[in-house]
Length: 94
Image 1 (cartoon, one colour):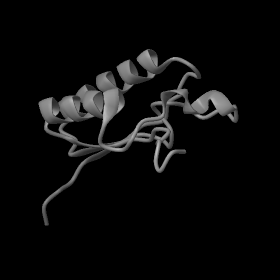
Image 2 (cartoon, helix red, strand yellow; image 1 turned 90 degrees about the vertical axis):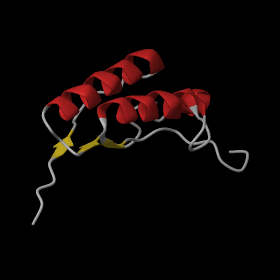
Image 3 (cartoon, rainbow, N blue to C red; image 1 turned 90 degrees about the horizontal axis):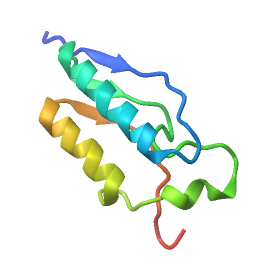
Image 4 (cartoon, rainbow, N blue to C red; image 1 turned 180 degrees about the vertical axis):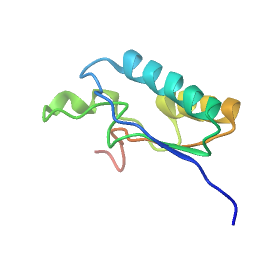
């Protein structure tokens, strides 16, 4: 049986600070890959944060498109690692 190493992240996503949250993701993806992990898993809404305020949607983007996706996908590709992350999704006009 082949081993599959997973990194599980617990983090405090900051409200209204997408740049900080993305920086944390990029850094921790690199760290997990450096420790020979095959997958790094982040908490729900770890990029955009969720704090019960209606303005949480200010960073919403379509799945597979936008700055969040591009940043995470590029780092995952550079590090050759799978990444599970959460963000506020814009879909079907909401």
